[in-house]
Image 1 (cartoon, rainbow, N blue to C red):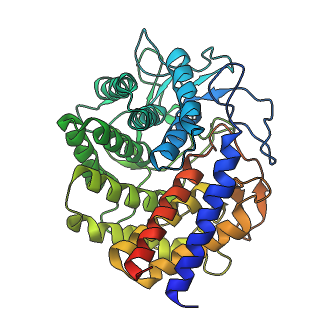
Image 2: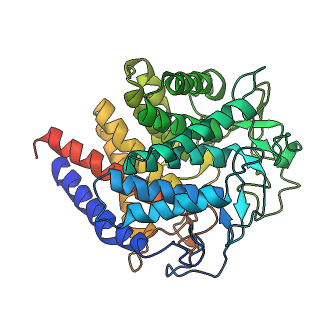
Length: 425
């Protein structure tokens, strides 16, 4: 099969998955018809589990996804109204009108549960509200996105060392150190702030939003990318001393005991985050109108590291984590790393024109199509072991929803179309 035929096959499969599986799945699921907002706990059949806790991350990600479907020209009139009711619920129940910012979790009816101010969630408030504002041409919602950006700047910016603190109490006093996160900064959050500020700038074209996006990009490369390996470093003290990456109680460690977590090895990086950062950076540079050339070799290092050490060339898919200079150590395969690697490797192929990046894309594409997607339902399973055995089978959770899957399918379909156009199809 020629390369062009392989691209055509992948494009056909991805377009079918997007339009005939993912979008139909989400057109009838997720919306809380009783209280508003979104129910994100879904079993392997896509049915609600009965768990009603609502998280800032998933409420905003649902808004983003449904708005992005509309902006991509794939909405038949279904998704933007679903996003609108999500925006209404978010503004009514998650926005702290006394202290500023956004609560972390709520009961199903919107009663605040965890009132902490966590910048991971705040980044997605900016991202989602700006995306909805562009999709709906809604200036009032755009102002809420600007307000979310402003509170991040005024409350969490570290004026001494640069960057942003990430974990605060309801009144914006810092959380305790360690597993409570009050003494740490992370690549994860700063990457998502870059993503969010980029989207806000696209919506406003305000020079302040462009300036701050550029500053975050510069900061990431200055402080958060390994000077030798060119890969991401996950966590730091406030003065940018690299630390062992740990789970935090309020975020991904909230469903497990993290008190005794000694952290990952110091020489450790995430294949998914590296490639996600690379393609989000490319997108950001385009929106900002900046030259890609000064960043090309830095992006190449991120892609090549994943290509060499992250891809499972024997069984398919991409592993979770490993050192900056050797094979993967954490060899499970999580859905979101697959999604981000798909987009990133297509970006690398378009940017450098080297077939090795297509081969990496095709490897992960095949794994996703054959193993990760629950074709009977339409969404993706969350986690596999290194031998491709299914470990978790739910379709939705407090942290797993449609942000990675739908976005990847949309972005891949667009890139595959661009590749075919360059090939003369």
